[in-house]
Length: 602
Image (cartoon, rainbow, N blue to C red; front, side, top):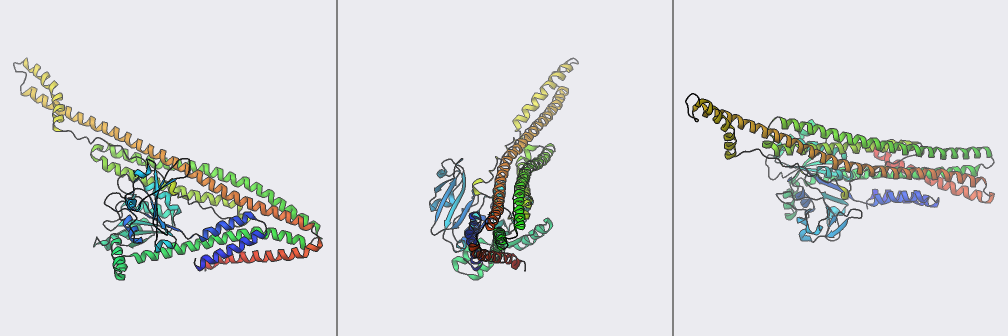
């Protein structure tokens, strides 16, 4: 435990001691919860990026261990969480609707081959793979999360990966040096930055591509034009592995991992320290303000018992404050309820509007040509656009939820410092499930035999009709005129058949597109409603706790003032001394808490 953590923990311990002496178990619980957060060193680093960009190899090289599967195919199909442990362990976490997830041990030799269809899952949905390994890097509190690829055909994991990002302390977006950023990558990167402020882009495989510096410069230009301000770190997992094996410092420097460590130190650890100090400062100030209210009310009554009118006025003010709190409780609950209802409606409308625009554009593309020829490319484009729309909707919903929490917190502004709740609901047990891919479509390719049969069916009537007519002038049934008419009508029949087939494929393609977007809307809409219910519960519980603490503080002040007015003279002096000491300690703790954020500002 470093010096900063020790300082914060000691400040919280002293605050809990004062709250305990005052008999405020509710405030003690709040301080102890804050102390547990301070003493928890875990910092979650999520590694994301398109398929086949080297995410898993990067995690293996960072840890100098083989814990993630590496290959040419989509090897990471489920989230893999790697944390520190005294000895190696691995567990599959399986969904068990209605109860806690099931954990199944996985042997070390099977860790890199786990898939959603693993026999050990016994047909259950695989939520994630938890791995514990002895690692000096992870011993400092880092937890690495290797995620499935968010690119490629179908983009099936993008929305689920976005669901993890709000709870991350940092996000590493991986893209290899073989090519410049694509538009879907920039869109995903913009979404990531909207959910987590600590983001870095890793340009991997620089050992394989001599032109990687040009790629980095081109990517930097793309980021500037897109208005995305993130660090870009070229790295080589292969050079890193060789450097560790050979104990070569120069090779390790070339791998780029030293710059990565600097990012983690400056943007993750340092930022976490700043947030921890701000959170502790707010908690201590809020608790000491509650205690000072009670101490001050009783002390004032004890010091001046003769001023009965003033004491009565003080009691009336406390009573009025308690009644006002009840009124405010009703107001903030109404604000929360109305806000959640409005948010649900806005999110659903935003999602439907985005999907409708994508569907309309896809249908226009279908009408412009033969969808059978370009269906794979159209399907990939459609799924990328839908993934981007779902991601933008998720980011917007997260921002609106933060705005709603601030709006509700305004009702408590007059009661002292009101901490905002933690809305990072990126639970690995409830990631957004990918929807099924776009349905297949007939290519429309017709063999030579079928073409001949269609032409013959069309030409038969022409040959027969014109042949019979020409027999009246003495020509045979088969003559140049009848044959020419047959060829003409046969060609026309083939063109009409081709056009009808294209129209049928267009209709089928539009139906497939609409079914796909409906499936996405249904699945994402369900997940959005579930997430909003979680947010509502978090906000409700958080602000209910604040309201109860404030109400109890006012009631304690009222009770203390009443008891002080009836206190015996023999006990008055000792109680005044004790209250003065408690008030002084609370004031000192409040000053120290304010100094925590003032020092950071300087």
